[in-house]
Image (cartoon, rainbow, N blue to C red; front, side, top):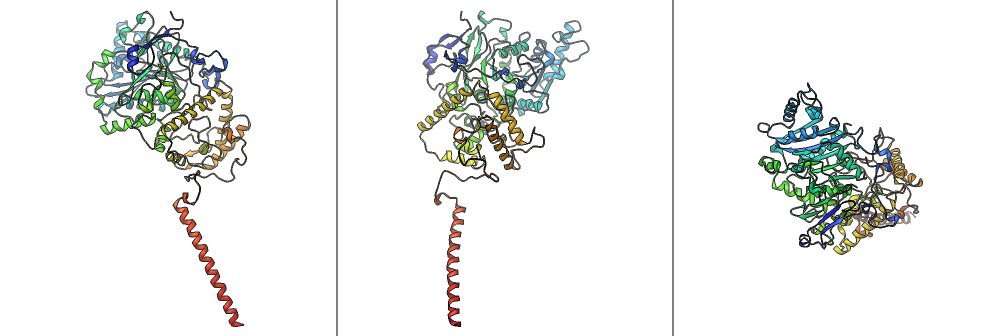
Length: 634
């Protein structure tokens, strides 16, 4: 009876067992709450970004829908005999089958397992025969077309013995997506979907998924859930369009999605507390390009989903529960086949698995990760680390999950119900800007960080970037001896400061300011990228002339009203662009006195003092000798 639908919060007894204060039951869904947080004050209303705020980001496409866009589908498959049937249903039930591109990570034993594409072609031939010669894709394709849409399917084949779990498989598909982007056959404004190789689909599922994504009214939306079983195909579950809703976790060896709830009669996709399910992920392709699955985690099953959810969310993406089920999962057909679960005996060792857990724990601050600040920060800022639009502290507050103490809740509150969207400052270069990383080290190349990044440090990235090395700042952090309570208070204060700034700037004229800043930076780097100076390269390190140019461009942009530097540095005397070139130094700039100087410097000072003493004594001896000789000659 609820106007916009309802959400089941859980069984009161189970919630009490898990440490929640919630009474459970159902609550009415309130879509407006996602922007207002329940406040009637217009100043408190902050809604997600949409292309209408920055039409140029559409890259020439319509602001909604998928006209002139493609839909790219990723299917990891491990010895799965249902993969060919999935391809058949995917194409024959689509409204626009010619605009779909499929990438299959096929992990087979070639002598034992039939190929996914080959069997799909046979199925389409049988379908044509059943329909008296074929016709449309739904009828098996036109007569004479041996395998309709075969040129739209890319098979990435590896031997099953080389499999290393779902994250490794999805990571390889992520690399294929990136390659397609580099070759200009995939646009950030295309749609991307990741699902499993044993699925079925409702009629016109492709158009319906795009329409549902548009309903979220968020350019950074990711639709995700544990989809319903294929026995519900064509059904309105329980007569109330019931859909699975992910909002809780438990702790095993990692953070595991747990206790799926449900929502009923939702009027639109519902914002979740950053809980993502690997069985279905639907978004614009810029999300897949910015947040690829980490392939360096062989053997991981538990932990895959929340790790990626955290990375999505810190990059500015929001996870939504779909309000309808258009893609369904064959649970009996996949889970009852012993072959399809054999990846656990693939090419990874216990040491590999241990390192995978260490890696995931480090990124999320879960106990068991890297303890040294500098090394942990480097991993968090790397290619498969966290994003720089929202912080990990903000994620903990929003999700309600106490990652640092492995507790399912930080405050006992149930976050399955209505939630308020967390504002963030969009990247000045727009939603389609894909961050760059070194191909070998996976370190970030978009340095120094600009002011809107949560990684921004004025000592490293501000005026005179490079005067203090990032490593030196990390060393200072390691030297701190604050208590856990003091650290928590400082983190909370930083979180509140960033949140206040984000709320102030969200929904403002930032798109125009960002465009001005991007233009200034491009001009400083040498124009449109053709023959310009790069700020950083792995071989040559920082280009200090280019850094000077960018710093100058940043000041120029500030003069035009684009605020880059923090308030304390704006207009401060003596903080202009230094003359000459910048330099890097690992010397800690916050300690004073000879005793804090590095050993080589101490030795140099001592040598200078001894040399000066020797020179004085020697010069005194020469004067005495000359005086004696003068007296003797006289």
